[in-house]
Image (spheres, rainbow, N blue to C red):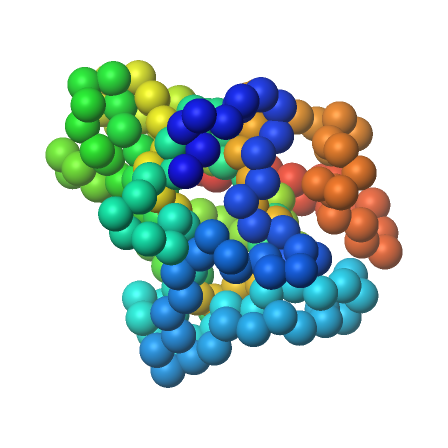
Length: 199
């Protein structure tokens, strides 16, 4: 999808304020829902992904399973709200050995496990809104000893609220982010809550 697009700086694949925020995404809501609501904390439209079984309620990009994202930017950033329920996301990448690998982060696992094609790891979220930063190049090297080439697919499972999902070429501090990539909260606590997965 993005293989032939110039990839520097920031590349957004979901923004809750867009006219059609899920245009690129497949949606599955088994025993749950995926809908746009106003979040009281930030007084803004967000996507609410909720379900009794996180595995059967999710968003996946690209929506067409025969296509791939082709994103080469190594940092994945999710601005999500912790709603104190099971939540996970999964990223499929291609490494320099042309092997497809998957990384799954969840708030219901306590240990990391590395298998040949799947690495699972715990994710700790603070109360309320979080900026989750996932360094795909670092995790590919640490888990498999190979180099990250590109992101093929991403899935976000219930339960969470989503403001934006984007990729960047490096780790940006909050003050370096473009205005519409920031999440404005009533207090400056958000700046302290920005974190990388598995610190």
